[in-house]
Length: 318
Image (cartoon, rainbow, N blue to C red):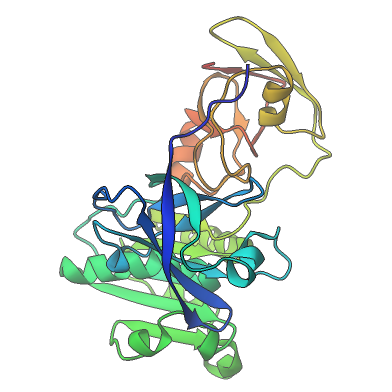
C-alpha cells in the first residue's frame, strides 16, 4: 500500500524580491482564486519542487493575506538543493504544488513577559510572533543573531524597534551568548526560539538551569536525527499485531514503508509534524523539533521519521 498523500493545491509565484543577502521573499497565490484561511504565527507550508522534493517553509504571517502566502528562503550552499533551485531557477508565473498550512510551533498567549530568540533564517516564524505579540499589547523583546547585518531579514525595520536587539557577527565584542541573555530573564518569562541545532541545545540547557518552564523552540533546519549506528528495535502495530524489525541504520518510518504500511509523512527530518504517531507502549527517544520538552516527556506521541526508542520494543497506534 502506498503512503498517504497530503492534500495539495496549485499556487502561482507572482512576486519575488530580495529580503536580505542570500534571502529571497516569494509571494504565492492560489491558482483557483480561492480565499486563503487566516494563518497564525508559527505556521508553515509544504512546497513541492519539480523533482518531487518537499520542503517546509514558515509563513511570514504579517505579509500573508486571504489572497497570498509569503515565505522567506535562505540560499543554502550546503543544503539538499531546494533553496538553490528556488533562488536560481524559479521564475515569475511558475506554478508549484503547495501542501496544506500546518502549525507545529504555535504561539500561546500568557500574561507574562515574552522573550523571542532567532538565529539566521529562524527569524521567519519569530518575526511573525513578535508582530502578533506587539499587536496584543504584550511585553516582548526579540533577540536576533545573524552572520552580518545585511544578511538579517527585516534588519532596517527591526533596528528601529525598541523591543529588538540585533547581534550581527561583526559586532562580536557586544554579541552575548544566548545563555547569558537567558540568565537575565524575569522569572516566569515565556521563551520562543527558532535557530540552528547548537542554538537550541544552548537554549534548552540554559532555560532548564534557570528554572524556566514556558520554553518553545523549532529548528530552522534539520533536527538531530538518528545517526545510523543505533540499536535495532521492534515496532508492533497495535491495530494488526504486525511486528516490524527496525535496523540500527534505518528510521522507523523507513522500516514501515519497507513493509508497505500506510503512514503519513512529509519532511523526513523531524520538523513538520506530519508523521506524528501515538505511542501505546514503550519509551521513545525524541529527536524532532516539533514538540517542546514537556510534550516530549509525556511520551504520548513521537515523530517516526527521526526519533528512536529507549526500549527494545514500541507499540504504535497504527
